[in-house]
Image (cartoon, rainbow, N blue to C red; front, side, top):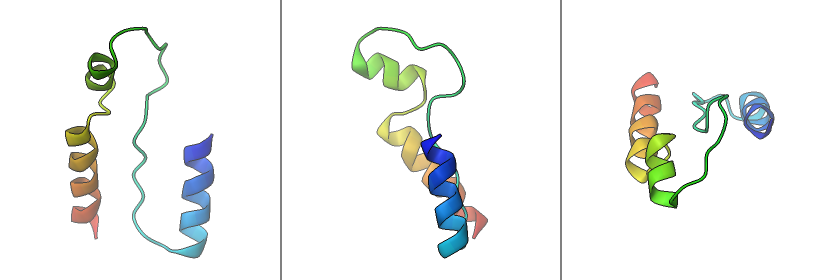
Length: 58
């Protein structure tokens, strides 16, 4: 997918830690946008926490 393609380009051109953030391999659901972002771990705070995890790896 797109995450794999980006990770491949980044690892070849700029070797830095990469942590993909996205919806896991599960069936999607309908609902209110904010509730879905929370359910799938894609809120602003979720993404910030993932960035902090990557920064700790350096």
